[in-house]
Image (cartoon, rainbow, N blue to C red; front, side, top):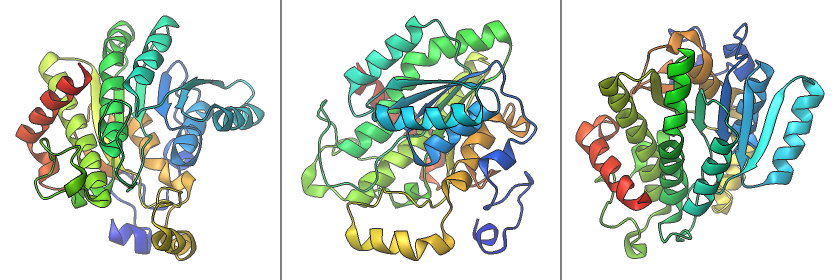
Amino acid sequence: MLSSLVFGRKGPSGFSWSSTAEEVTAGISAAGLTAIVTGASSGIGGETARTLALRGAHVVMAVRSLPAAQALRDDVLAQVPEAKVDVMELDLSSMASVRAFASEFIAKGLPLNILINNAGVMAIPFALSKDGIEMQFATNHVGHFLLTHLLLDTMKKTSHETNVEGRIVNVSSEGHRFAYQEGIRFEKINDESVYSSIGAYGQSKLANILHANELGRRFKEEGVNITANSLHPGSIITNLLRHHSILDVIHRTLGKLVLKNAQQGAATSCYVALHPQVKGVSGKYFCDSNQYEPSEKAKDISLAKKLWDFSIELIT
């Protein structure tokens, strides 16, 4: 990853740190596919949604901010008048909102080929969600876990009826390496006395990888034509560090020299979601549109199974 950053060296996929979402999907048609992208009102989520729509997919933007998403939708339609883009409200920190979104989507009778679990919060002060779960874990992991759980039957039905591989993409982060020492603090998820904003963020991003890995294992066991993978989008110029003033200033000034823009940040999500090179690949971690090695804890099968059971208890 470092050589790609410094030299722009291409990996085995033929793409690199500097590749953009449009570049990694050039020549690929997503016509006939339906995709949900969470957190698609701005940043890499917005660019991911725009690129998928540009390639012909019917994109559902699942967002908290409806006005921002509508504005982006209007921009996409101005560029590609025939694009199919819908905007639906989704607050991942609320299980009631996730359930309402899933019910509304299923009621539309649409197929579902691609689910990109992109939205997230980063290194925020301690807070509990409406469901009483630490906010980063609730938003970054539990909300996406529940959303995926509720939409799995639709994805399985779509892949079976169309014989087209379904793809689930969890946007994680290299920040997963900064999770708490034990990885997931199952017994202390909501313990403010031991809370670290960075540790909790790393924990939630580690959970994203473990979730994708366990999904991939289960799909293989069931013989389901769906893959699940996770990725690091790269260090992006965003507002995620707004709760850390000094880091945010550095991030927005010096960061412009070395950080990706949204077009580059969305590349790996679009690559994993659409590219033929990823067909049949599941339970892997990607960076710069190439397979990459996550931490040892992220490859722990028993930890992934334990997280799955823990998450099922939380959502039920």
